[in-house]
Image (cartoon, rainbow, N blue to C red; front, side, top):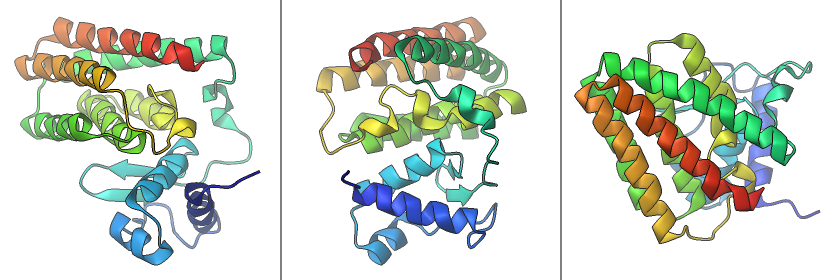
Length: 225
């Protein structure tokens, strides 16, 4: 079976985290350092980091970098978050809709200028992204910021544990193919509706906009099932 450069890099970094070479809470080398050290492209580095996120080994903070998490135990507590079939993927997406619509509603009750700026930055990155790896990075940054702004540690924890695995394009499908322009425009518009509702402090509109986006993403994702 062919192993991609991103898989190789992800496995290398995972081994360093698991054996303690990179301690929990320690910042991983920057994208530029990983590119220079391993002779790979920035896209490969980003895909490797997304793979680590999906394995629960790192957390990426917008504008700060990626940090090692305590490696999951071998008991497989997160096995229930892994959807292996169409029915399970549908259930997982329903779970995501439930927690993220509530997160958006809570975030709208106390709009924070710093969070709004962070969301606007993620939205700008999402609009400019052409490759799936860049799209997922910006998309997850946006949704995580909304969850963080909810002020509810459990909602944020759920989004972190799900990671990019529940986004429109699963990490397993990251490749060099550019995204469809019409789909990108729709996704950007949906995220903008969420941001504008949060700016207004409109609880109902924020929740509805998030639900509209996530339901639409289910439709866009269905051909990939």
